Length: 348
Ligand code: ACO
Image 1 (cartoon, protein in one colour):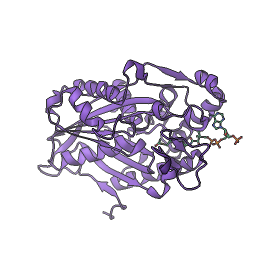
Image 2 (image 1 turned 90 degrees about the vertical axis):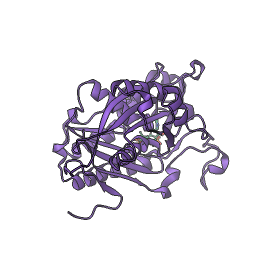
Image 3 (image 1 turned 135 degrees about the horizontal axis):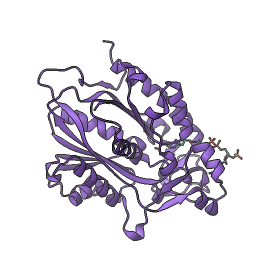
Image 4 (image 1 turned 120 degrees about the vertical axis):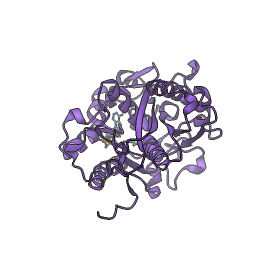
């Protein structure tokens, strides 16, 4: 076997190592707030059009939290995780650890994960937030998998959630049309079947490009040369063209590397569950690998880009439709602020 690409982990699922434990995705859940922000709504708020948004991004509407109703990152994560626990038929007290991927938690201390763990009744399970922007859920999945595989924990919840509406500048049409709010959760469980779990995965970052996509918390965070009349504190800043270029290249490369490491072809994969950043980008990656539409899930039309919430919401919708079944080969892929990117190929 060739040496793995730098940062590319190769799991043992399928290797049948004697006595090794496998990892199952035992349950999933999602929650998106009721509030809808359609392209027609945005047309009334800024100089944009349904035609422009649909053609460039594929987005038709997004869900948005209403803070006056108490909707928050903590609340939607809690609702998603409760559904995932029920789906896994797991008592919350059985959880050993909760990893929550988000960049829009209520506070930096305590972590949102601690509050969600308390809200679902997870006893004294460990809990922490993981900040990898849109890659947060896939980073969490890889970490949770390896902790279970290594024997450190048996039951780990991974939640991905962002409430992007609270960091949107609705005067900035370049960014505001793209994002929405949602949470998704997966409950991972140790199994005696070593054939189940991650076969190959990766987590990478290039911090030298941080200023292409960032969320300033004070003026001191603005990069040198930033147009201070245009950028705002607590509002997501994005260089759309640069992020698009990065994402298109990275997306294909990370899929290719993960397939190579696992020794499988794109046509062997039963489902690609990818971060929903732009329908054009997803369709071009799908076409590049010759994957039919039914094996490459896209729901960005209904949610927009929900950052760390995108991938777990897709996964839960797929399982609800009877897709992503036990025994299938499923690839998770994400990329986002940092810049970060991650992939995880699983035998479910
Ligand atoms: N409505 C109407 N016109 C618009 C809008 C809008 N909402 N936004 C921009 N425009 C205009 C621009 O001003 C520009 O006009 P000009 O030619 O007169 O200057 C024109 O449309 C074209 O703008 P571009 O930025 O070149 O448009 P592009 O085709 O690149 O699409 C987009 C922009 C959709 C943002 C694209 O660059 C993209 O998808 N980028 C990646 C975004 C992304 O994935 N971000 C998230 C990463 S994950 C994370 O961690 C959050």
